[in-house]
Amino acid sequence: MRALPVLTLLAAMLPLAAAPARAEAAATIPVLAPLTGFLALEGASQRNGALLAFQHRPGVTVRSETVDTATSPEQALNAFARVLRGGAPTALAAPMLGTQMLALLPPAAEAGVPLVTVSGTAEITERGNSWVFRFFPGDDVVKTAQARYVVEELGRRRVALVHQTTAYGQSGRRHLLANFERLGAEVVFEDGLAPTVKDMAPVLTKVRAARPDVLVLQLHAEPTARLVRQAAALGLGLPIVAGSAMHQPATAALLEPAELAGVCAESGSSPISGGSPALERWVADYRTRFQVEPDAFALAQYDGISMVLDAVAAGARSGPAVREHLASQAYDGLAMRYRSDGRGNMAHDAVILCYDGRDRTPRIVRRYRDVLENG
Image 1 (cartoon, one colour):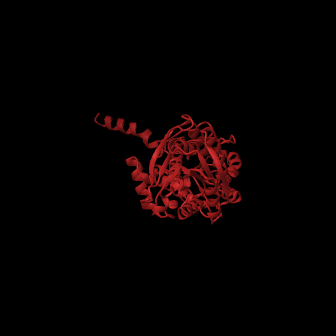
Image 2 (cartoon, helix red, strand yellow):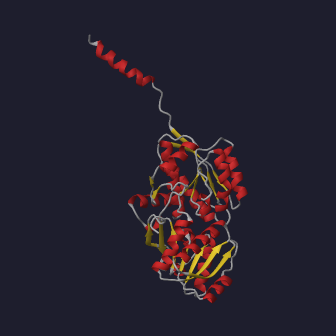
Image 3 (cartoon, helix red, strand yellow):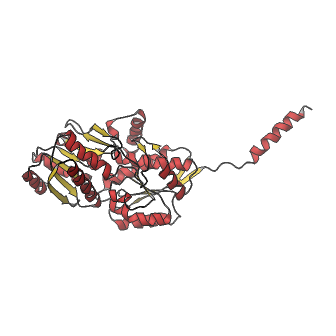
């Protein structure tokens, strides 16, 4: 009779022993980023954010490779074809260059691969493609914040606008012009520059002749630094409110602190400006791993890939399953709360940050929550 409890226990354990072990969550997430060319600074941040997300997510095994897409749509398409050779990935950390993203939209939809991007080019989510998810606020968000800060906070109404001739520059230009018109400000001068332009003196001379009361920029990182440096050298004497490239520590590092005095920028976030304990731990981890300062592009890519990995951990094992999760769920990231607006725009907040001329760390001076909902 004493053997009965033991037999009963063994019988109860048999189903557990016979049950198959639960498969470990796994995902294939290549990283496509412009690591050479005029967007190399931004592309490196994008890559770093994705890699740190892989490292920080226990319980999910990630298979990944990083491919340099440089600066042409053809190179992005070749990189995409390369990663498809092993089968459709679970998701893709997609390049942040607007022209490359636009080129990737059709083949990604055909292959069923969600594109997780931090590109600001507005048109990316205006083509009805349900496979793209943008985790950096689009130009409709950040350009609204940038224009509102110029008019409502600085009280400036005579605007000089210098923008890039790339898709990014043209997208920002379109939204800035519309917002300045809505706010009753006059654009007294505008000019478009190729990313290869080195000498900013000619355009700054034209800016001065137009007698604006503010200079607004929509340029990539290195052109932004060149223009800000030459504006300081020429004693332009205007407040400068730049695009998100100016918030990057790598951009500020190209300038002396005194050259940054009176310069502000829009962004989705500014990790080095401080925030929650969790964000500050993330900044410390980023510095340790990459030996550089993090920026909003790295943080947005980190948050985007982290949401993908949460989907995988919850059972999404394919591109369509990940797409459904991203389209239907909200996610509390380190930068903000993300949710799709039905077109793949996940980020809806913006910040304005400014430099005081004493160091290269900006201060957040204005936060805009749910920008499009709140005007």
